[in-house]
Length: 379
Image (cartoon, rainbow, N blue to C red; front, side, top):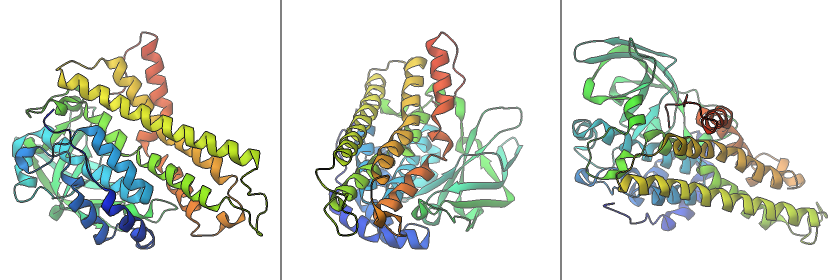
């Protein structure tokens, strides 16, 4: 591996936490936080070094996301989904990388992979793309977009790299949680030509097709992206545990919140253990994928299915951890703006992301354990 350094995000965490209420109120990340994440190197962490990136080892990237999400889950979410996009663009090749990062390694790229509202026409040069896409996190701060589409004659997803100048943002992000992600709709009214070199096919990501020198780019793309929409909940759950502990003192409002209450002690211990176990297991899984890539080994489909199922279960585990705390957080937690209530909303809304639904992932993994074939090509 060419770069195994870490991202030092510690200096920005206090400011990220301080600005979190503003992002929640305005329903998208503040320019100040985007600048903090940029200066910390998050948006160039997964970019090849020849384009000015850090080419960071993925476990270090995920550790940084968890730390940021402990200050503000929306910031951790933006850092993850925007920060991982240079990895996918690297899979397209140097021509696509040059289009986006030729002038700066800190260019930001948003995405929306659901192709249901897209329209495509195949040409000799590529695809004519138009339509509507929902849930494009961080689009207000991005210059390019990765948009899902299904090409004529295909049944699997392709991702099209499109300049933001060809698109329009529609303000639709009115939600009960993760307000700061600004995950609005993207509209392309007039078809835009996407050249073939700026199209990434799902099967290429599944098969590890790539042309970069660093072997980490052979890690299946879907494994890394799925982590970016899951691990911020680990940081958020740790934030909830910290907020709960700070409030678990004798009070004239709620005299049951005593350090000696056995149910409180049980809940805190179980939540803490679940958070720690989940983080450790996820990072171990990613380290295993990295080690296989470094050795040039093919990652068995069963191992991919196991890792994908675990990652898809992270949010459900963190919901369990936060629910353990929220259910005993007392009367003050019901008021709008309560710290632990905000975290509760953020984590629960994350479960709505298709990548965080463990049910089909469990079925696929169980089927493969019993000798069946995979039905999931995003792993």
